[in-house]
Structure formats: C-alpha cells, structure tokens
Image (cartoon, rainbow, N blue to C red; front, side):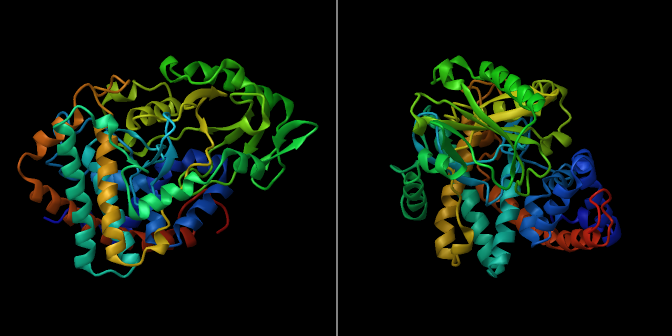
Length: 446
C-alpha cells in the first residue's frame, strides 16, 4: 500500500474539510486575535505548493499520525525532532563556541516524537522542490535517496564514536556551495545589523522608527522589561558567557511582520548593553510568543507534555537539546501569563537561495550535507545533552531499529516523499479554493 493511499480514500470535499479543520484547530485562537496577520499568512501559502506545505505542518502531522511507522519503536518514537524539517529550514548560525555552522534552524515546532517524522517531512519537501524545478520523477527519487543514505551513514558513524558533538558543517569541514555560504556570512557584522535598525541619539543607541515596529505605552514597556529580567535567570549557569551588567535595557519596541510560520505571534525587540559600554557591542534580543508545536497535537504522552512549562520554555529547551552549542542568549520568560522564547537577533543567520540552484548536480551534494546535518541534531539530543527527557543514545536506537535494512528504509522514504509530495500538490489546490471562497472563517474579507 502506498504511504498516502488511505488518505486518498477521502472525496475532494472531505479532504478539503480535513485541511480546513486542521488549520482551524491549530490557529483559531491566533486568527481571532489577529485576522489580518493570518489573511497575509494564507495569501503567502497560496503562492505555490511548497509555500502551502511550509505553513501547514499541522496537516502533515494529522496525516502521519494515521500512518504505519515500522521504524518507530519504544525508543525511536521518543526522539528530539526539529518538527518542521523542510528544505528551507537549514542555514548558518554562530554557535555558542563562536564557530560559524551550517545546520538545521528554526525550532518553533521542535518536540519529542518519531525520528522518521523529520526525515519524512524533509523528503516530501524535496519532492515539492524538485517538482517546482521541473525535475523528472527519477531525479526527484535520487534526491530523496541521496539525503536518506547520507542521514543513515552519519547516524552509523555517530554510533561508532563518542564524539558526535564534535561534528559540524563549518568553514573547516565544507567546500563548494556550503563553504561559500559560510564565507559570505562571515563578512557580516553586528555593527552592520545595529546600524540597519538602530541609531545613535545624544550618545546613546536606540531603535529606529520603521515599518514593522511600534513604540510601547509605558505600562506595556514596564511589563516587557519585567519579563526580560525574569528571562535572565533562565540562562543555565554553564552557558552564561556574559556579565550581568550586559543585560541593561536601552530600548524596547514591538515587532510585526513575520514569515509564514510565525504569523500573528506577538513579539518585541530589546536593545541591551552587551559585553562593554562601547556602542558597537550592543546586542538585540528577540522576545517572541511561543507557539504550540505541531507534533504535540498528535503525541499523547503526558510525561512529554508535562516536561515543559509553556511553549516558550519548550522552544528554548528543544533548541538547546538539538544544537550542540546553542545561542548563549537563548532562554524564556512569561508575558501576561503566556510563554515567550528569547534569543539573539543575529547577523550571522543566512539561508540557502534555492532559486539559484537549477540543476541536479548542484543540489545532490547539498542534500548529502543536509542529511548529515539532520543526523547531527537527532544524535546530539540524547543522554549526553543537558535535558533529561530522552535518556538513551539516539544513534544506537536508530541503528537497532533499521538493522541491516538500509535500502529498505531508504526505499520507504523515497516512496513516502514522492507520494506525499503529490498529495500536497492536490491539497494546495483544495486550500486555495477554500481560502478564496471564504471557507476558512475568521480571516475577514478575502
């Protein structure tokens, strides 16, 4: 049976209703709070099937929760996952050790679940990306196969060594496109970022007034500053690399205008002193409301749910688990009783420009690296990390579950990615039809 065959037994009308219901179940509260933000989100999702897929992780999890997963056992169904792993959720960052790394990014949906959910979601995104570039079916299958084999090979290498935290896609270990991306990112500076969104008035730096930002009334600013000071206590002592005086707040603004994934979530930028009083060392931190992770809607284990205080705490804890050396500013707080995640607004974040990659021979080597990066985040987030939720070696669990069936595992992933990619293309048309005809309530006039 094809991986999506039972999903295709629905009539188009029933499938459309399933899509709408999944979106409403995930976003109804946020839609009510900010209808215009979700109207913009849905218009962005209507651009093409890949954009729809990026914004509809809730639909994906409603689907995979119904699918048989023969690679998931007591341990491999309980692995830290990124939660929304698609081709555009990889990029550069400066890790806590000061090393530029190309890695998985965006941990808003991170949770504990089946390790296959990440790689299945990525496989389907690869199929959609290949279709958008008019690649043949055989080329798309080879793309998924390359990623899957690289993932398994790296997991096996981790199982044979105790040094998985030392692996990384860095300036020292990459070549070609990834090396170029890292080198270009290296040219960026915090001063350039500061000059772009702040200005110096009367010998002090403050945020510029600009589209997407708003000045706060005194009561709101006081509440944000109180939440910020509570956040400083959530940075683990082992990760605290800055002095307490570095957390002096200079300015605060509200922020709007997010991408597809974070529509409607309240957020603030906080400008702080940084390591010295020199103006070029000021730091910008983001405070953003945590969202309910899409995988959490289908994971019923109460011990996982109860491990987290709120969605902001869950995002920060998950990122620390999944990154070997996470942002040293990463933490959480509460604002008006709602969980927030706090992290640096870094100039060292850059993504792959997939539009510039047009040929398979450009993309296949990249997919091999992305398979390694996926294996890295899965395998560092286990018994050797600071968290206590996953208390076994992930790489050993995955190797035991796959056994000597590597090609069978790869074939399953190819079959799922191609068939689910085809389903998403059909879903995209149903979504656009539902949105433009007013079948998604609460978003206002379309």
